[in-house]
Length: 140
Image 1 (spheres, rainbow, N blue to C red):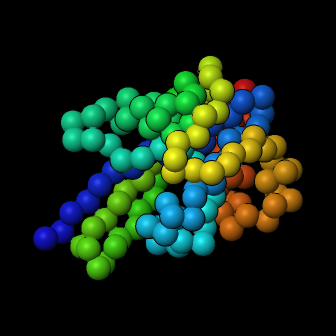
Image 2 (cartoon, rainbow, N blue to C red):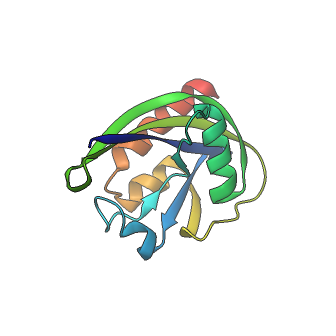
Image 3 (cartoon, helix red, strand yellow):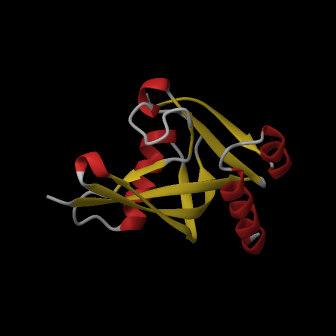
């Protein structure tokens, strides 16, 4: 039986820096690419939940922050053929409004990074972070 889920991720900006979080090794082992531990806060919608409410809930649970959701910036998907499951994801541009980062047990560290700092790290998904900064420049 084929199934699917919907997930939201937040690209959170504060003082022109982007929040990057890192999954624990255990948490990353559930992903299609377990070596890719860099992450953005977010998660799956519960049945009947508004996507914006779900993202705010997930961000509060994973990093303890409150945000303003600006707009969606990217849609993605992957299929787990072994489980006949498809996940559809929506990435949102978000502005930090309050709180200090307090990580959930799923993550082990975080950084607030400028665009230059991200480029210097040579991240596998650098393109998505560059795009987030480009989108952010239209908002600020």
